[in-house]
Image (tube, rainbow, N blue to C red; front, top):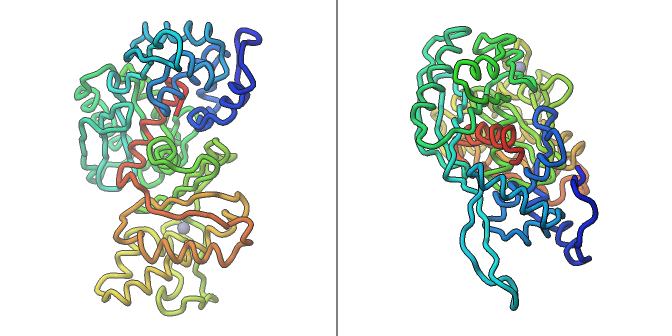
Length: 408
Ligand SMILES: [Zn+2]
């Protein structure tokens, strides 16, 4: 997206313009989806300022103008509004350059607002937290799912959201939710069979119940947003493989979340990776098993946590390493064409590091490198998430940042 200027040519020097092109913080901006597309140039400019302050830290008005390509007049005008709203504060004054009067620096008041974030991925518990804008959980709540499905499970989500709203001790920007299943741009859960949810307008209903903005996205999509904003993920092509009861993936490519035609991009868990004619790994993984989706040998039948735990139960360290390596190899075989097609720079595994961080990760990368042209996989990084179990939770918070303030 090109910068939008609302007031004609300005006084940028060629050096300033170079700064604009190379400014890292502004380059990190995630292109908004149609839902959060700013309505006008002013909203876009405002989002650029917030984005820069969020990633670059305290900044003077002049530095903001250089970094965003906006005129100083426009920056001052927008900053006045942001200060009136309490989003931005003046920090202190210090000399800028060798001459001239001190310039006050501005900071985003990340501690002055909070977000309610909820992760619905876990089959047994709903996980929620009140987080500040830096992604630090301030209060956490966990609610057992028990056998609740359908409307009863939705009521549990509403109860958890209400309890978290009550815990917030700063103004709330909104509620973000990462949910299993296919979720459309309006936050309607199109289908989440394991919760018994079909065409549930969760964002709309919860927003009415709580009188707050509510943003809902697929949990793997939320996870990749969490890595993008709070986990230091690559800007130019990252895929997060989320391993839990199932296996899903979220993709950010060239600064955009990849959602696909039916909002189902990244559903790698049901790609067939083991079949009965296949003896590549022979004994370590055994024959193809029936998947919950009804088909044989899906990635989930070897990589979902229950499958991994069952396969390594009772094995010694060396045997366990062999089995985990074989699982990693199947993951790599599944990911190789994705890497070849998208020329990704980073793959992040989200799940328990003790199971996934060693042979699974190493052998997956080796299989990708063996099966792709060096030009597509050279320099590809594969690593465990640095966000622990909180990737989807923090991604749910990013849904609110992006939906309400236009940055991520
Ligand atoms: Zn399947």
